[in-house]
Each structure stands twice: as structure tokens, then as C-alpha cells.
Image (cartoon, rainbow, N blue to C red; front, side):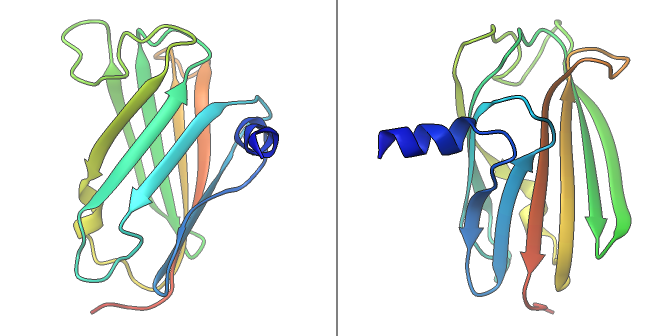
Length: 155
């Protein structure tokens, strides 16, 4: 059993289900072929009643995290809906737990996702999350491709 879990966790291209319910289905894959030590969970698995999503992240980065730039892109039913860039770690006055982590150290954290207060229309969402260890976006340290299927409108 442990061998199967290890294989799934570290296999590039393997799809991981985050959650499935009557109104929401979420999963992710890695964008690259590099093996990653990464898990992500989300509760509750619902878009009903504007829940506050609690996310749990465990990650063992393959390089030191002294600088981290995140690019977040969202597509809704095939159309680009959001493109957001943010420097999370710059080496000075960093506020996130991931900042300053060394290659091989385990990051285990929980956080709220504010976007859970958004009323998501029924449809298919593709969310690409890329993390770079340089300003020029040449050295990618993580890339995730999330699929979110909202099964019913809540308006």
C-alpha cells in the first residue's frame, strides 16, 4: 500500500483528485515531467453557501526558495478569465512560510482561500499555477494544472 501511495505521489503526470461532491469536482496534474513531493487538499468540497475553503499544502521543494514569483492563470469554459502575477518571496521582509525554505525541507501549511467567496458559474475551469525562482521567469520550481468543474449554478 505504501509503495502505491509513493508511486502516485511522485509520478509525473499522475492526476490527483482534490475532492468530488454533488456540486464540485477538483483535481490537479503537474505541468512538467519532473517528479514532485507535493500534496494539496481542500475542504469543504463545495461552492454552495459561500464556504471558506481551507487548503492544506505539503511540498518538498527541489531548490532553495529565496525568491518566488507566482503566476496564476484561470480559464473559464475555454476563455481566459484571470492572469495574475505576484512576487511572494524577495528575500526581504517576506511574510509567507515558504520563503527561505531550503531544498529538501518540508513545507506543511494550511491557509484560507479568499476566492471561495466568489460565486462560480456552472462550467469548466482550468487553473495554471506556476512558481519561478527568478524575476525573468526562466527557472520554474513548480507548475500545477488544476481542473475545477462546477456542476450547478448557485445564484
